[in-house]
Length: 301
Image 1 (cartoon, rainbow, N blue to C red):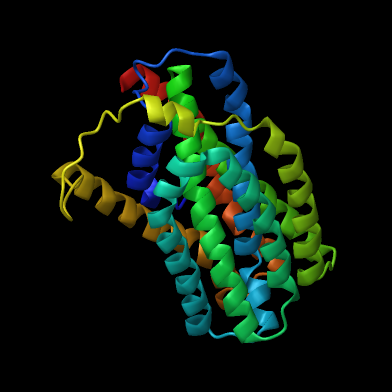
Image 2: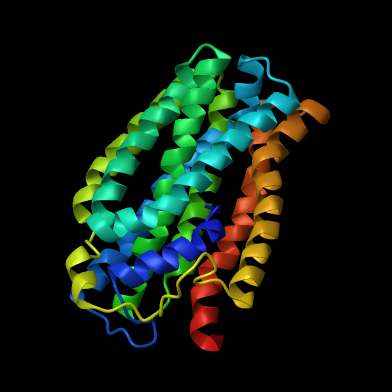
């Protein structure tokens, strides 16, 4: 997410309007909304745990394939481009089939791809797997935000910061687990395969609990956002400023998450175990801010 998540804001809002309709302030809590709150949060946790496990082991990935900083940067760019491309097309898909089928599928596919990252031998195979991982992550990222917004509107109170807090907590868990496993001498491939097995089990347990935000609802509820024809439809100064702000934050976040462990290990001589904990400080602070974010939103707007 990271996330990662502001980038999908326009897609998320549009798809949520199609899937759920209405606004947070006007929505009334329902049994379905209350039941779907914690499964929605768990989706963020599983997605974050998958991506964070990949991120904190980038130093090991770099060493295994003897990659330069430039080559690792290009692999990161391939991941990001694939994620962004899929984010752009997921709105219509979500409106057509609903959020639950997409999430149930993507949460099962991502662990498989994570395991393959640890198992592939050559650089070409690595690029193919990372591209696929980026594509599925981008899809999951946009859809899980759409799903959470729809649940938020059913509840009539903000929950999105809490969902993102779960993402940050998962990053803390992944970095601490990596530090422990690296200190214990567990290999890179073994770690990713074991993590994938845990994530697969979590996805199988979570799938039936997800609440469908509903394509049938969207057929009855008109979108509150008027559509404007042309390439500039939906764009405004506010949207552009929000997008630029999100971009700036994402560049900083990407540097902290993607490169801090590598910087400590390669440039400062830290062990892999210690370098992995670099992500903990950043994501721990994120989690602290996000835990209180919903209360601040509810109180101050």
